[in-house]
Image 1: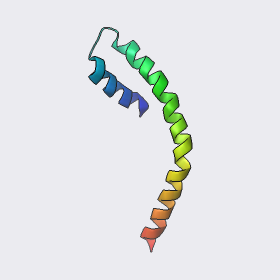
Image 2: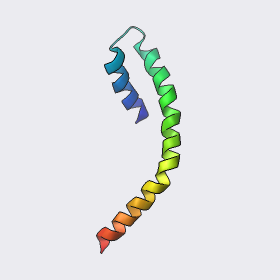
Image 3: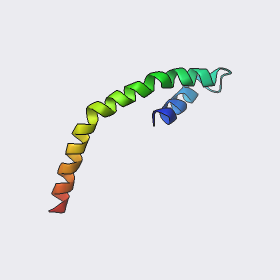
Length: 59
């Protein structure tokens, strides 16, 4: 997911510059660890929320 989002945003920001791949790789190398940290932080909350919603829908 982070790979495709950084691809799109980098393409919009710099266009098809000669060094596009390296700019994209640099942006992605920052975005990927941030995405992993966010997953680790928000996943428990999202799981609890999903479980709660599914239980309410089953009634």
